[in-house]
Length: 212
Image (cartoon, rainbow, N blue to C red; front, side):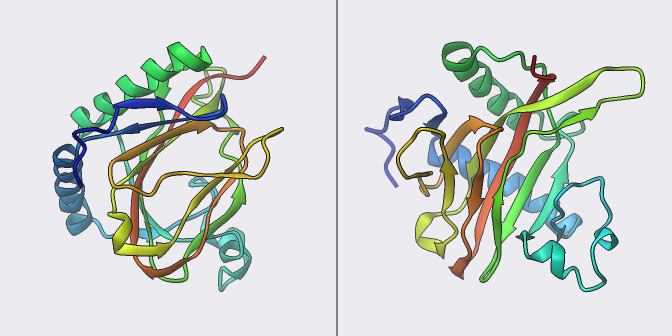
């Protein structure tokens, strides 16, 4: 893919979702580094919330899988991959300052997510508040970030769809490798089932004090 004529940033037709196109060589470096993580620590079954054990649902996980079926690896942004975290944070802050002006303070752990044939994530929202620590106030997910790591020709299905209030129809996020999609975490969205191949993406959330 030739990114020579692709703008680094362009505005969509609504105020809720913004997208960037990162260079191919940069994405290859990210993939190479994250692949080393996968070799050391295999992906685990995704959960609806990372703090809930899988056995919160039935023994076969059927209730759980009716909502989400994928594999993932959690990555602490402060332990390693600092340059990846810094890159994503820079673009989040740039877009936030220009379009959202939300009070965001930091990133949650990065989530490397893999969808293989038949896997999906049904409609959900990412925004929820949680205690950062017993001594600190509630924090809230405010912006969701999805970095596309797979080439769009390597899989079929798996579209990231975002539902906007007052927006006619669904917005479909671009599937091009290196696309960074940023949207309000309160928006309902889903990943449609993969019908062929595998979709790999890096997900994270910008968090800040609870909404007022």
